[in-house]
Image (cartoon, rainbow, N blue to C red; front, side):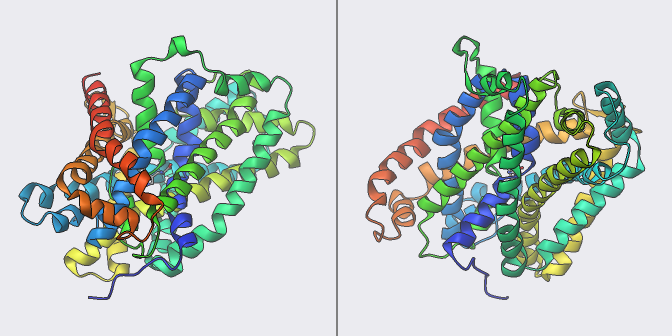
Length: 454
Ligand code: TRP
């Protein structure tokens, strides 16, 4: 078997991990959930969850990946070889990303479609009602979303096929800075609109009387989703991290850039939503139903301006989604390569086939398959619900239990301090270990049952 590839520098590690983290979760999911869940109280709960629960979990996944040097399916089994449970439970880490990837690339396809539509004359003359109609017509028509889903998935698979160094690294390194600048430009533009300040205070002025367990439940699910934890992605990337790397620093950078990015995306969308008088709790369609209308308003009289801003915006969404999609694909590919001794390109074909077909079914659930329900949900909703609200939390729980209670404390400390090389990490280790051992499992368990029963 070929030797495992490694990321070539600390910057590469951070860029690839941030590339995985920053995606539709930040741009599509965060603003619409914040809009539904009361704005600033949700943002507050989200920041708390990220700092105290999700970041330690993120670090735990890197520890498992780097120490085992294994794909996500087998990583915990490698570290606890005597236990059948830990040997087999890793299958979750391969199944979850396949489920997420299938519907994720459907939304990636929508974004791609909207990027192309933005360049089409006539797209911006619509009233809010018409924008909504264009959106619902689009998602319920069978062919267009399916074609876009397959194109989006196909490009992402091609990136993965080129390998860790040439594909994922290069792609992320070019694209992420571009994206950051784009979203900042749009946020500045959005805040400068008349009436936009209401949106800013909606996002940042919490009313603590509205803080409910539900707010925390959604915030934690979103926080996991956004940082890509709770399945194999970070375990897999962790296995490519070199022994000399200071993983505490890499994690902190990734976590902070993901958080900042979500807040920036919120600032790009929410003030404009308020300025345009759109209901912030419009749901998952929020960016697709409001953004074209917002941009039409912005460029009123100057259609070219609307087209340019909107095209840039959806380009940013597509690119961010793609770097995340790449990390979802990589989990399955790494496993297939090691388990069945497949070449990278062959493994990629299998992932394309499976996620392609599942995604087509998800896409059809907005149209012809609308009546097919699992647990009272359409296929798309079921995939999203089952993965974000149940499976990510379950896997996250297992990971913190594994690092906090199954691995030897000395081994965990060894990873964090690089066998004592990073003296500065010793104090932080105490805090980390306490969080992972006690705070994370209890918090995740509580929210898991809340979601499961609710
Ligand atoms: N974090 C990505 C986003 O915010 C989505 C994603 C990529 C993901 N890999 C993941 C979510 C693993 C959960 C688990 O869009």
